[in-house]
Amino acid sequence: MNSIPKFVLNNGITIPALGLGTYRIIDPETVEFVVKNAISSGYRLIDSAIGYRNEETIGNVVNELIKDTSLNLKREDFFITSKLPPKDQGYDNCRQAFLSSLQRFNMDYLDLFLIHWPGTQKLKPSDPKHAINRKASYKALEELYTSGKIRAIGVSNYTHRHLTELLSYCTIIPAVLQVELHPLYYQKELIDLCKEHKIQVQAYSSLGEGKLVNGEIEIPVIKDIAKKNNVSVAQILLRWGYQHGFIVIPKSVKAERIKENLNIFKFELSNEDMEALNSLGKSQTTKFCWDPTDIY
Ligand SMILES: NC(=O)C1=CN([C@@H]2O[C@H](COP(=O)(O)OP(=O)(O)OC[C@H]3O[C@@H](n4cnc5c(N)ncnc54)[C@H](OP(=O)(O)O)[C@@H]3O)[C@@H](O)[C@H]2O)C=CC1
Ligand SMILES: O=C1CO[C@H](CO)[C@@H](O)[C@@H]1O
Image (cartoon, rainbow, N blue to C red; front, side):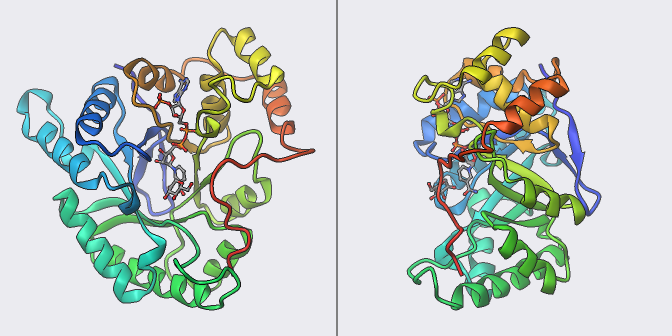
């Protein structure tokens, strides 16, 4: 079994440098197959969200693994993340949504809870209520954190502007920012702001939702670096993120890919390769997932 390095968050707790993404894994049999496979391969971090509709099944599988004494797994060996959906922004809604999430997982605490998106569902992007609501949601998260129900809090899909605004009023600095990051969407300014405030960056869609690894988009530079290092394109993209100090959370429903994606800790990219990858998005960026830039 592969062991995964850990990073230390700004509140002192540790977090695995690589975890399992679970977006679009909903069918309970698939969730069970994927989570069991990932855990037996060495994964401990599971990235879920209220919107992914898989919290209950993930909770059942994890609780079942903990009960199996032959496995010697404890709750504290896992790192469970979930996220507040845009429809539940606001102080009361956020509090209630988190407590319901905790119930679905059937756990006493979650390791990380993120505001999934800076906006509130159904409001026009320019509506100033977005900012009011996300401030109220964050306050609810700070209180839940202080009460011990969440071990770390953070935000997702915040731009430099959203994060700067949050830093101007928060009492607890977010521990994690989860955003889309890969060589074609290398948000350097945002990353630098996180470094300055000791906010751990977590990269999502490292594989471009699969498009950077399934032949849909072929980048010769990445292919050449993979060939030279004798690893796959997926491993290069994940290693690029890890070597930058980001947590990576690839998603796969296939046992062999779940293992392949974990195998990024035994090789190192040269400075030259890192630079070549960093440069890819300089002239033109490519974003695969939703874009928060216009949210007030
Ligand atoms: N906070 C947010 O707003 C967001 C968070 N996320 C989180 O990040 C996770 C990862 O991002 P996601 O967008 O899912 O996409 P990824 O970039 O992780 O790509 C996943 C896709 O790549 C395929 N794949 C995985 N590994 C390999 C491999 N080694 N070789 C070839 N193909 C591979 C998978 O197919 P298959 O399953 O068939 O193997 C799947 O279709 C999500 O699951 C979610 O947890 C994602 C988007 C937004
Ligand atoms: O996290 C997620 C993945 O991206 C989707 C948008 O494309 C979101 O809706 C979802 O919540």
